[in-house]
Amino acid sequence: MTTELLPLLLAVLSGGVVALLLTLFGGGGSVLAVPLLLYVVGVPDPHVAIGVSAAGVALNALTALAGHARAGRVRWPCATLFAVTGAAGAWFGSSLAKMIDGQQLLLFFAIAMAAVGLSMLRPGAVVVRPEPRLNWAISPRIGLAGAGVGSAAGFFGIGGGFLIVPGLMAAAGMGLATAQATSLLSVAAFGATTAGNYALSGWVDPALVAAMAVGGIAGTFAGLPVATRLGANAALGRRLFAGLVLIVAVYVAAKALAVL
Image (spheres, rainbow, N blue to C red):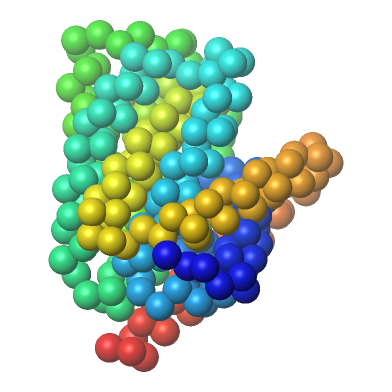
């Protein structure tokens, strides 16, 4: 467990940056947690960075979920089925990732980052649909989508929000806003499952998780007033952020290839 002051302070700063970006631009910000842990905090093992990141993502998602739940935006039956089947997939995916060399795993992670960045560049249409109700007709679709998305989230060590939202929209017929709120239960479940699996191998540092959580609270509160002032500039900011994610993806891949 990390006890040195400087890495813990850098972890607080990293958690604040991730939470700020998530607050401003929504899904995708959490993919920067692993590069920050590796190249700013100085975590030497990619597996530890992924384990700590997954735990931090789960905590941040629970905080956001509480707010959406109080507002009545979460569709709990669909959310629960997607999260349960997805958690099983996340355990499978993270178990597979644990068997892969850390630097090779970073190459896969860089690919996931590139996918997140590209998905953020796509224009998001506002979709209004009738509220979904869980029934026998759509349950298999939701379960299969959850298992598939959860496997990917567990393997790459990411929250998977950029996959969960379209998965819920396609499988359950949800509108965008409802899917975004409902997805947070799955983000928390996938992150907790992945972190728990990594913890069994000693690849989760509780001190770093706590430090990133503290920074995340500060980043969220700092981002809320800024987000309300972005207005028409939000789309431009999101595109710039997507460009940053793509640049970091190239950097992560280059660093991994240099070690292999």
